[in-house]
Image (tube, rainbow, N blue to C red; front, top):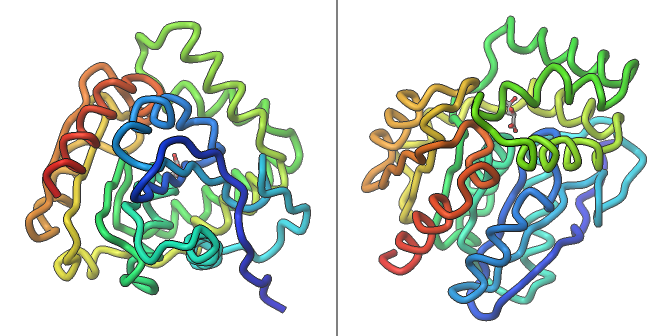
Length: 258
Ligand code: MLT
């Protein structure tokens, strides 16, 4: 039986309209620490933990899906007592935002896509997801820290940033990381949705993102009617961690004008 949706745990700061932040893989809500503190004067910032980590513990890491993660967020939005949120997602969190927008469009006031893409996985990428799931199950998160974390940061990332990335990875149980990987393997291709996105949209991308080239993000923004695009200097794939001020300024300006 497919798992049922659930309300997620989160950290929050500030008051007013909700800005809901969806983390990437293999991460958790703590990746948004600088956005919680830096944007709480303009929104009630809510940084959720997707199921299976942090404040959303769940040991049944079987048959999870990007759509299920979106269902969980929809239930969480309802539990917050609000109709709509400004919705931001990083990378895998962006895939979840696309799913939420597809299936719960009335809950989204505006959309912020950070270091993400709309395209689904090609066959060889699907195979790599299976290898990642098997590898992390067998060897644990420390292997992902070695293999993946360096690709998510710029070569110039300082030790504090590297340590922060490592600590966030290590918060995530290995079975959860494996389930995330398989959920990403099976996600839809959201490219056909781009032309019909009708909420104000901002695309933010680290200029040195090694795993998702910035040109593709620019093209994605061009395909969304009226979308704004902002490149973030001195940042790779984890732009909100490597250049929090750049990301916060872009989000602040967008929210004040949308
Ligand atoms: C992420 O940062 O969430 C992942 O790198 C996304 C992906 O592997 O497609």
